[in-house]
Image (cartoon, rainbow, N blue to C red; front, top):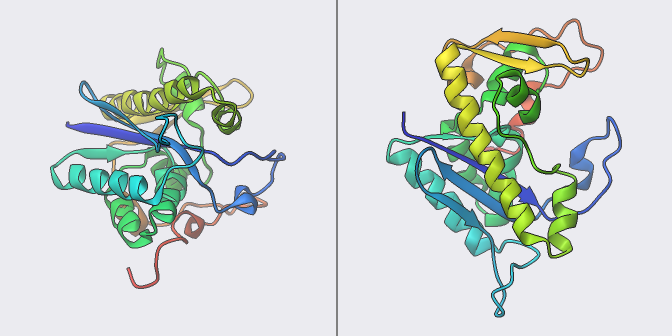
Length: 234
């Protein structure tokens, strides 16, 4: 497979309390993004000032360039992937680019194993939990909460390494799922769990599948929240 994964880090600094809705702090700005072709080119996407130092926020022009690149790679036959890219990454790329329609079209063709997992089990799972469960040797080098603070503090390379690493890990997870036909993750209690995933599906196919059984949950996350940002006339 020709595989490309992408990831973004936001530049907005806030303290998310346990159980608090992330959207309370939206809309978000983007600090930096990464695109990694498995076995090939790795790119960083950010805006810079006249002094060539990275800017606090990605410009609309750079976000449109990133969005066009992802669309072009899909059109060229690449399997474009992101972990929770439907709900988060593409939503905010589209927002910054001021082109939610193109972002939504890219999202529909994107492979998002996290969303596919959610549609089977009814709850989300983190990239780190799956990386550990699938025994991916590469580890995340910081947390998503730390990245905006490090970026604002001028520690640009550390955040760049982090965002590249997440795209690299996503590629490794996608290949592992394809090889094994399942997702394996480590729960908060340290227990290994597995979920069959015989084939990876693009978002548009997952959205056409039946919704997950969440009858056992007190506070289920509606599937509609993942794509609620799509334009009505898409």
